[in-house]
Amino acid sequence: MPTLTADRRRDQAKEEFDAFFASCPSRKVLDRLSDKWVTLVLVALGEHDLRYSELARRIAGVSPKMLTQTLRSLERDGLVTRAVTPTVPVTVDYALTDLGRSLLVVVGKVKDWAEANLHQVEAAREDYDNRDE
Image 1 (spheres, rainbow, N blue to C red):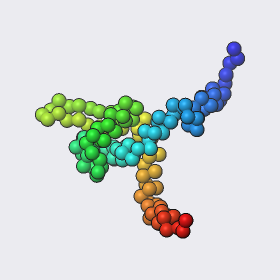
Image 2 (spheres, rainbow, N blue to C red):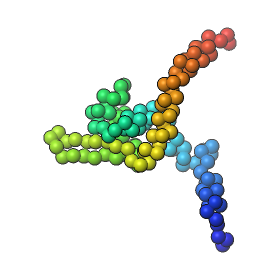
Image 3 (cartoon, rainbow, N blue to C red):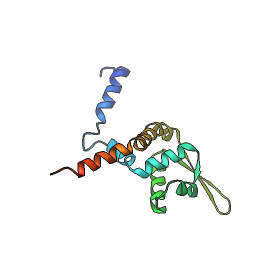
Image 4 (cartoon, helix red, strand yellow):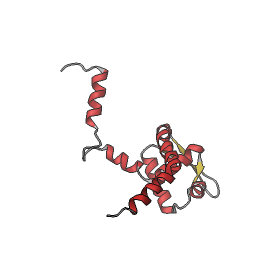
C-alpha cells in the first residue's frame, strides 16, 4: 500500500465530502446552519455568554420551544455549551465553544450582509413581483 502525502490525504478528504451529492453528510450541517434561529443564537452568544431568559429577550419572536430546540441542537453539534449552576432558581448559562466561535466568523458576516442589503433585496422582490408575466 503506497504512502500518501499530507496534501494527497487532504485532497482525498475533500473528495469524500461533497455537499452537491444527496448522500453527503455535510448536508445535515448545512441544513442546521440555514436555520435563522441558529444564526441569531450564535451571533447573540458571540457578544457574550447568556442565560436562557436573556437569549429569549435578545432574540425577538423566537418561541420557547424553538429556542430550546435550537440550543439543544447547537449543544449536540458541539457549537454551544450549557452550564447549570445549582441556585434557586437554577441558573443555566450558554456559551460558544471554540468550534462555535469559528462558525461565528462566517455566520456573523451573513447577518451583517442581510442587514446591510435588506433594502436592495426588498426592491428586487418588489420589481420581480410587479413584472408582467
